Length: 496
Image 1 (cartoon, rainbow, N blue to C red):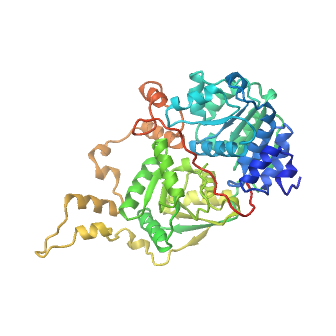
Image 2 (image 1 turned 90 degrees about the vertical axis):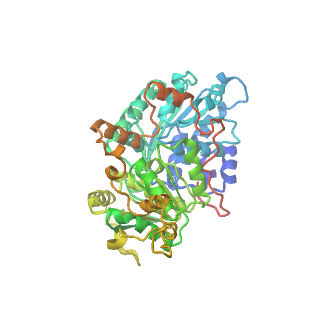
Image 3 (image 1 turned 135 degrees about the vertical axis):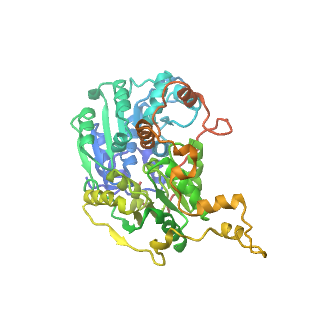
């Protein structure tokens, strides 16, 4: 099918009205191919580069298929969960539900989003009142099932969004528990969407889908062609200076910088703040309120750099994001595709820079093998990696260390701490006696698992009790989660 407008796809007038008001008139290739198949009730295994409109590709036909069952009854029994959409991260779940709500505002269907990191008691009244479309992260969905606030026995459409990320984050046991609570696979429609496919994804599809139609709009495991990729080779201890040089020399206001660990994200954000850059960090240890505040400030251009772990590689949608920086290359090459997919979205031009230390060359090789290209190697004008480790202190530190008339320094203990952050971070064992204690292999594995899976349920006991009943904000006050990722409308026609 070669539809050139949403009208040709056979969607209801109410949905077309909402799509038009959103400023979209031309469907993307994944939407052109997926929407008719989903409308026909067939299972789909869909793949497309990130930022090409997969959410509307399954969201619009789901709204169309469920619209005849919309009603205004106050009875929860008249509003069972008929469509369940699972997403790997909180940010992506919020983005998907915002799109569903926007496109379905004239259909009469109810939708909501449930995810961890906030007080579950905020979500209970909404889900108990009944919703036809539920978007959820796996861990929080199981929490609601344990609270008996949700029943999945009437689900007609089941969607796995970013299925490969589900695998990476260790959600497969949770997904299997959820699937056991759904009607039989033969009695529901199953949709699996992902930007990358692997052998494990194929195995999952075999368990989930019934004679699915495979839809791919680009060569498998490729990065968006609108993103210019480059590599800057430099020692690990010179990366921070190079990043600062790039941001300042190019006068950039929005740079999304990826690191591998939660602790590394917080540490780099603190160091860049000491260097004079407006910076914040988001990762799995941050409360949902803190993550949302950081994202809002970044989208408004109040931050020069946002440091993030791969928790932000899916679901973060910033209009016209100019630059993504891989401060550390990911260990999984597919994650590189998702990281750089935060820029160059919906046909826009973007740029991705990777800072590669000698010990990371093996990860670069794996990425190039996956992409089947050689990434261009560049150098930064006016920057010498050999001397970057001996940078001069920040302006605040210099003023504090200016010599007095008698030749003695005016440095105070507080100034010493500033200078310590103005140079490359010392090894953990050299900074604090407490961190000098060796960690067990199990502790390291647990930290890595939580870094990969920030939304997984906490262990039983006091920690889990706090997660289910504790408040998600420091002031202890419950407040509704605001919309995070509404796209800015454009006066010119564009794709959803």
